[in-house]
Length: 241
Ligand SMILES: C[S@@+](CC[C@H](N)C(=O)[O-])C[C@H]1O[C@@H](n2cnc3c(N)ncnc32)[C@H](O)[C@@H]1O
Image (tube, rainbow, N blue to C red; front, side, top):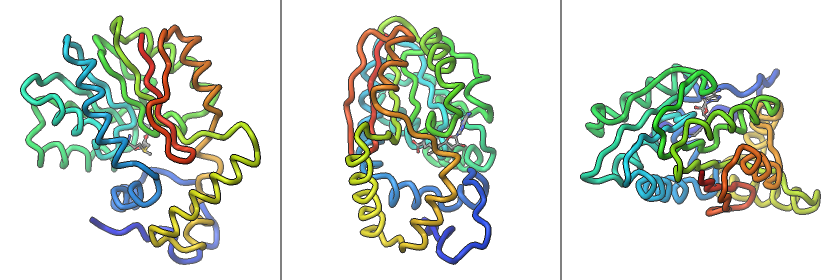
């Protein structure tokens, strides 16, 4: 797996973070060393999604990157395979995703689309996964997106929403930020890498509070909204229609 060395050396002007070829090449290493609990998230998204797919319907993996969640769902479905639609707006991410799907022999079941998730019609969905994706979309667009996803979900279907959140109390937010930086240091990122990446993400990864996410899901109509995972400020919510 190519190592993430994107911010290893000092950069004069730090550009906004984007999911281009450079990021895609380092993404697998980056996500594991930067997101506490990433493996646990993926390992659980498979079986959780499979639970909601037993009665039929499709799975959507929106902002799929390299398809980790789609492949986890594919594997968890065992002999009861369902169609999975993996969507990402970044060509470099989808290209790598396609290679992964081919390597797993899953082309028949996992369809890929290069598109903004806002433009993808959601049909006959039993599960919709937004694993660390909504946080990269402007806040003003999020209410409409969640409403649209709710409309496309079958009754009893689920949305799995994972986000890096802002903690309500500034002292807690600061503490979790420091603990997250320690996690990155333990994974061999230097202080320079941590600070340059933080700057690059500043205007791109837009956090909201857990209460805000829960309120948005309830307002869209979801009847059960429950946190099933949290590691520091990374939270995953299971919302059921
Ligand atoms: C942190 S990554 C998601 C990780 C991935 N879901 C996983 O489980 O490994 C965020 C992804 O969202 C994609 N993305 C951002 N905005 C998007 C949009 N409007 N529509 C579709 N994909 C989007 C990015 O290209 C990127 O691949």
